Image (tube, rainbow, N blue to C red; front, side, top):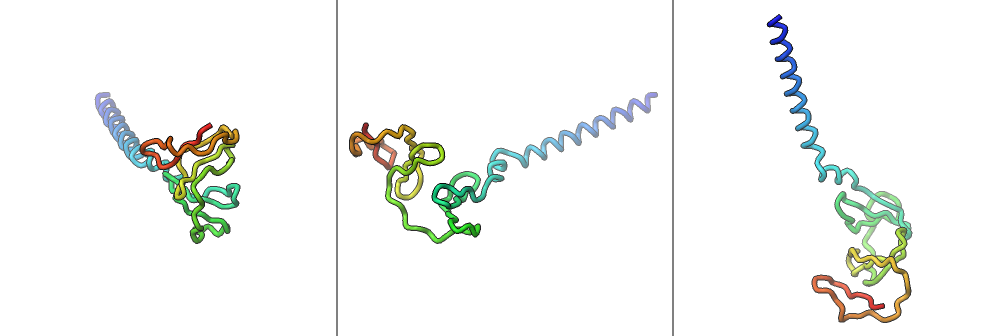
Length: 130
């Protein structure tokens, strides 16, 4: 009977070690950075008929408008300004090179022109006055 107890103790100790090693290995390969990388690829088409490349962390600016799965030749950049409204119903600010985090969902027409004196330090765009 004592031999059976020793065998059972060793068996459960080995199984426990195997489960701990398995848990460590699976959590080491499924971290949050790895999970975000799984969603890279072309997204769209959007209102302009083009797909845009998401690298898993940010939009890269690569565009595929002809649907061949490859980046198209770069277009001339659009002027800085508010563009939209897009699928979310909001206008978004394009600074001439990239989209910023500025969003205007209040789609009332402007009552005053741009207020260039209200540039926020650290921001590269002007704000609108109402």
